[in-house]
Amino acid sequence: MDIRTATDADFDDVLAVEREAFGEEDEAELVRALLDDASARPVLSLLAFQGNRVVGHILFTRGRLQAHPQLSLAILAPLAVVPDAQNQGIGGKLIAHGLGLLTASGVDLVFVLGHPGYYPRHGFTPAGKLGLQAPYPIPEKDADAWMVQALRPGVIGSVSGTVLCADALDKPEYWRE
Image (cartoon, rainbow, N blue to C red; front, top):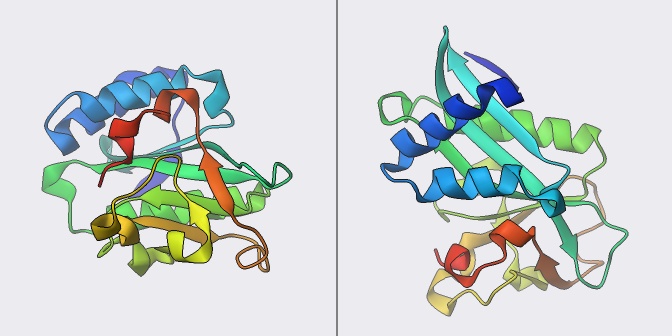
């Protein structure tokens, strides 16, 4: 399996992976909107290939911590793997590759609203308990789905506040697990 940064020429493949993985248009439309959103930049969009076939995609967009504008944040949304390639570690490899690139570029924290049984295996921990709130309130029953991973030591525990996201992601319906 190979992972590489998606280019403009890969746009149709990116959307195809999102559609196939989720079985609907919602995530593909979100990705389209985020890739067109200047407030989401810098964006990190990665594709996973098995041979010549695109089997996975991950997108990280810019975030900000309201009370700490000096920090560099990213929001992971979405992660997609086509159904017949799931449960092969592709999602985890996309996450690890993306986190490595983000670390090298100086990002401090990465956030995700996702499955609390999956993302902790990749180093994410519940963010709300650490004083780091989602752009919209997360219902208590889903609180552990809002997670963070520090890419730089000493950040978690020294800051708190509400995460601000790209305009295209700034809608309450995207913040329900």
